[in-house]
Length: 67
Image (spheres, rainbow, N blue to C red):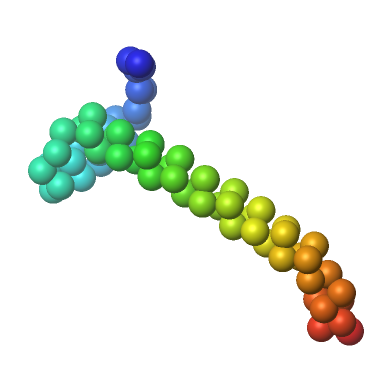
């Protein structure tokens, strides 16, 4: 799927500079950033779900620890 990404001049210059340092194209740098953004969001969701399960499974112990 193709899309247009509109960046400010400062964002574009920063992306260009970082891509040059990494030895990759600006497009590849942007794609990596998207993958990292999605991966971090998915991880945050999984951690939240695990914390909810722990809270539910150990509610009594957590309540007693809080007393």
